Image (cartoon, rainbow, N blue to C red; front, side, top):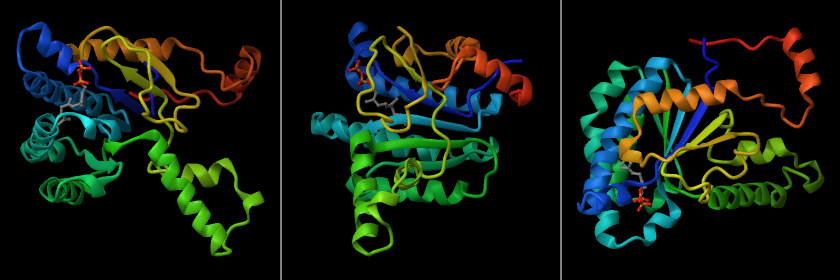
Length: 250
Ligand code: FPP
């Protein structure tokens, strides 16, 4: 049995380089990247990973050439429409985090429709981080807390980690246990900042359009073999483990 993450997050990087290496246009890399995303989503659902977050479009990605942004937007809604049946068949609930106000109307409509249609599914929760940035997430959370203080509903000294956690886009969802990044770069690129405090980070060299279900299993095996100490010593963990053995899903 493999100890699976409760929440897996993936930074899907390398579509552009994949296309360039094949003398194709970047857009072909994104198209193939979307095909991979489908495969990985279905594999995670099959493995019964409770929550999967895909870093699909960052706040910084708005600065790419308009033609590339437009292609990514059109690709996104095309895939969401096309894969709706698969989401239903696999009992996947679709959610989004990020500043959705910046999405064009025609994209937002399809995103909202997909969220609504899948809202009652009870299997894996699939989260697209769309127009998402970690600092922006924290900034919005701070605004919310500042407003509560201003309204007299919260005292500054009473603010705890938990208030901040709850005010983030991820709300009450568990933090990612494992973050996978493809195409070799060991950077967070403004993804989950607060949420990644104790996440395991796994970087692999494959470019995203090459990242297969088999590569996912290798990443999951690496995760399962790590000892997560959360700031404690290995000995303390052994005591905890003997009292509260980890449940082993799957
Ligand atoms: C990184 O490649 C990828 C993105 C900009 C976003 C991810 C988008 C997809 C996988 C396609 C759409 C996905 C779905 C789920 C519909 P890059 O362009 O940064 O690659 P590079 O670093 O090699 O240029």
